[in-house]
Amino acid sequence: MNLWVVGDVCLAGEPEQTLPTLADTVWDRLLPQRKPTDVLVANLENALSNRGEPRPFKWANLRAAPEAVRLLRGLDVAVLSNNHISDFGEAGVDQTLEALALERIAPVGYGPNLESAARPLIVKRDGATVAVVAQCCPTTNGENYATHTTAGVPTLSVKLLRDQIAAARSQADATLVYFHWGCEQAHHAVPDQVRLGRLAVQFGADAVVGCHGHVIQSYECYRGRWVFHGLGNFLFGPVFSRTVSPDGVPMVARHDQLPANQESLVVQFELVDGKPGERLRLAAVQPFRFAQHSIPSPIPRAALSVDLDAVNRRLARYAALHSRELRDDREPMFHATVRNGILAYWYSEPPIRKADCSAPRALVQRAWRKTRRLTTRLTK
Image (cartoon, rainbow, N blue to C red; front, side, top):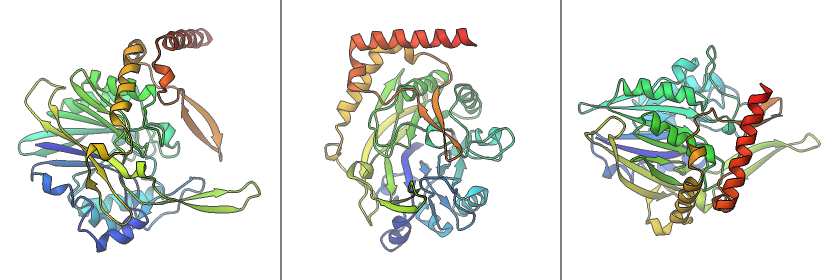
């Protein structure tokens, strides 16, 4: 069995309107490389619904008609643990689940309560099993997180991650963790992405992938297992935002995808015999690109708009200087403020900068973090 993993897929707007005349599915350039027993996993970044009402204070609400699910035919697992799946409320989610069921696409990462939303999805093929678990970071959107009594997506959490992976390992031959996290338009991960990705490996994940940044981010091999911080947009049309001017006038703006937003990585893992936690071997990392009115196609690595080797070198340098902090198993910490009556969250640290990779600065940062942790303990 091979496991193919792609990043954000959004059919809202132009993809939904133009692709039916151009292609059978959005996977037309990918499917010829797959075997019948292979499993394809993608993040579905929109509702498939004509029901429900848009969330009134969101920057953008994304949905396509339920009939657009035909464009996803061939997808095996749709990750719903993201900031747009419930843009049109539970009615929109319910219709999305109905549409996915028609194409026999299994959802993961959404449920009527936290226990259900966090439950691993077990995929069986050719006598082998792979578990997929998903989490969504509060920084992406604070409006649709599951609680013990309300529907939504599982929030980013160390304890929850440990429990999810333990449950997955007890039921499957291999475990894939899929995160929705990171800063938009940033090729470099934030420190907590690196730390939590590594923790997932320590907890027993065979591979870790993520998305949400809408551009390709860094990746690394940690303890023999691969962590991809951001796969980028596999397919994502222009986005129409809704804002209100200072004098109260509603405004709608179109945001086209830049070249970096039209690129992604498709990752292929091969399920192999081995020790638990070491059963997904990286087989290929293939860059893809889409253009307006076209489906994604493979491109050479050299054709990417970002120097991926340079991005990964910065990650390696940072990890070498901050190895102690990256082993910390505390829960993630965020900054928060009220925006439009709803809590909005930001990471406590920005994406990894070049200056963060200098030895003197690393010592200063380490001392500052130690002081902050000590102060936090004393004030409890």
